[in-house]
Image (cartoon, rainbow, N blue to C red; front, side, top):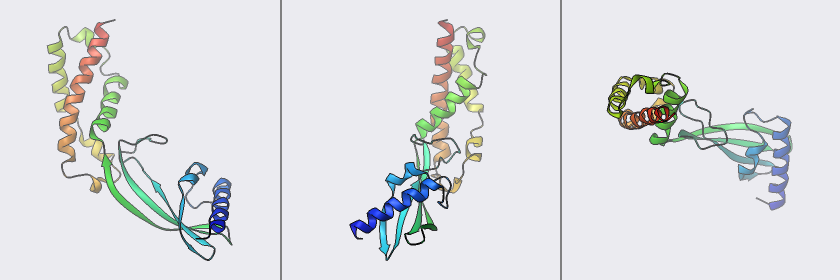
Length: 185
C-alpha cells in the first residue's frame, strides 16, 4: 500500500466518520486511531474495527468490560466515491473476568438495591450476618444473569458453576462489610 495513498485514505475516512456517513452509527472519530488499513486494491481500502460489547448488556464505554466478546467488523472504504461498505463480521471467543463480573452484581445488590440498608438493626453479631448472607446467596437467582446474556452460546461450559462459587464468596463478604459499616455509625 503506497504511503501517500494510505494517508489520504485515512484522512478521507476520518472526515467521512466525522460527517456521520459511516454505515454503523456507533462508530465515531474516537475509533479512527484504531483503524489499520489492511488491504488496498486501486482506491479501495479494507480495514477492521474491533468492538467489545459486554455479554451481559452492561455499559462499558470507555472502560474494560468484565465479560465481552471481540467482534471484528470488516469494512471497505472507496476513496473515489467517499463511501464505506460493510463486508463481514467475525465473532471471537468470550473473555470473562468472573470475579469482576460478580463484583459488579454484588455491589448492585448489596449497595444499590436498598435491601441491605438496616443490617445493623436486624443483626447484632457477625455470625448472624454471615449465616444470613449465606442463605441469601444460596437463594439468589443467578439465572437472571444468564437471561441478560446476549450470546449465551459463547459462555464456557463451567460458567454457572464458577459464577455460583464466586457469588457466594463475594456476597457474604459484601453483606458482612455493609453490616460492619452500619455498625460503626
